[in-house]
Amino acid sequence: MIYAAPAYSTAMLEVLVHANTGHPPPRSRYVVAEMPDDVATETLDVAEVPGWDGFDLAAPQAYGRVWWEARRTAVLLVPSVVTRLDLNAVVNSDHPDAARITVSAERSVAWDRRLFAPA
Image (cartoon, rainbow, N blue to C red; front, side):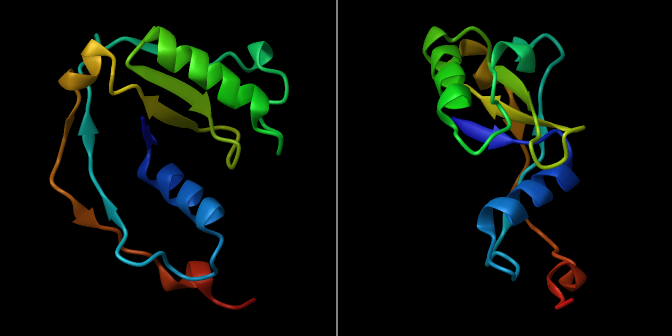
């Protein structure tokens, strides 16, 4: 399973929230993924997963497990709990379409130190 974001800024925010260290994550790297338009994708309907955005992860994890095991699509787009307006992407590497997603060479993440400056 690969966790990603369609936008670089959303990916950075997700890393900051989950790392929760107060300083830039060491040796952060990223890749740019290219996905053909016809790769099988679905978007989570949050009405189907009560509590999708809560601290109890049981409901969203159960939904994700069923999606993964069924191999319904190569990509599942889910709302970012951090931003509420943006999406994150989960890639099911076991789905046949996943092999059609290509990635660039790794590049270093340039963290702006102001994100970590004391208040």
